[in-house]
Amino acid sequence: MRSHRFGLIGVLALLIACPVLAQEKLTVVTFGGAVGDALRKSVFEPFTKATGIQIVEDEWSGQMAKLRAMVQSGNVTWDVLEVSDGQSDRACDEGLVEPLDVAKFGGKDKFIEGTTHPCAVPAFLSSIVVGYNASKFPNGEPKTLADFWDVKKFPGPRAMKKWPKHNLELALLADGVPPRDVYKLLGTDAGVQRALKKLDQIKPHVKVWFNTWAQPQQLLVDGEVVMSIGTNGRLSAAAKTRPEIKWLWDRQGYALDLWTIVKGSKRKEAAMKFIEFASRPEVMAEFPKYIAYAPAIKASLDKMTPALRAEMLTAPEAMKTAWQVNARYWGDNQDDLEIKFQAWLAK
Image (tube, rainbow, N blue to C red; front, side, top):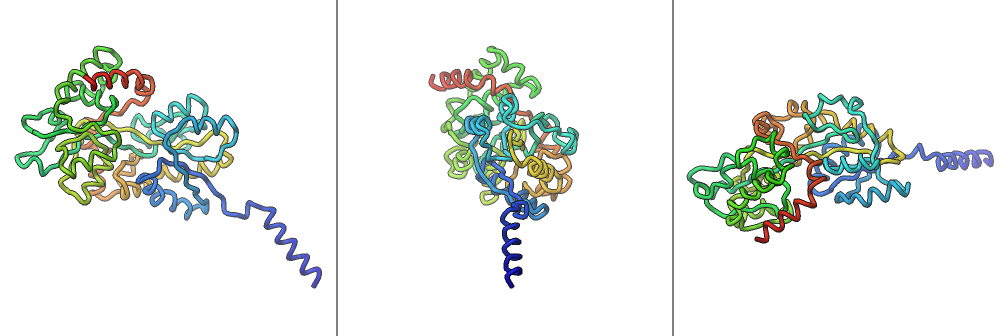
């Protein structure tokens, strides 16, 4: 009896001393909100089911100082991090995230052109578009970006975000500049002045200069404005219950969210497994069922229903006149252009 009791004690001691017998955990940090909910249902829960690795969720709002302090102190509690394309550039330049070879995740050709990165793996794309309330245009709906500026044919108040990003690009595009030349032109003072001059034309008709992307669809639903710059995912969500809310793919500007691994993560192997799983076409084909942002993986389109595919900004029809937001340009010029834009707005 005594030896049996010591045997049980020994087994218990062994269990306590061997954490490998406990379920492995991985901390994945996202921007939260509707995107976080969509990732949980489409990626996190299936990953845990497939691998047994538990996902511990955390959120951030892009505060680079927090990431920097974590890495520099060596007290790294995050493993996988969702970043915007601009944040991926900064984090990579500063050595705050691990280099990632895209070949280990299917190769460059697997992803939408222009989205791969030396320190991050493309996850999904969102887009800046023109949204409108179709009930306000019984004689014909807008079809192009230029129609946002055409207040005679499409009368009514507009809304735009109270910052230079996207507004300057859209102004040049509406002025006839091809997408491929937008940032070349914005690299000159003459190009910036041309964009502001085009914005002069619409400024008297902009009733609301909003601060967050949560506002445009509600402004449209309430009828406070008839057209607004907005994000395709939020406008699509609003359209589920309010079908009069629509948007244009003409000259949509898309941006990218990516997966990175925080420098100093103690779970790099599990983090690599997670990113590989999240980069499978069939996995990310589930993501847009919860929010209408497009997987950065080309083959995911083929695994969607025709109805869902038609909502994707990466569908061939939607991409005809698309342009990619240049994160590096805005990282270098945001502060200067913010001053110029706010001075223009105050006139």
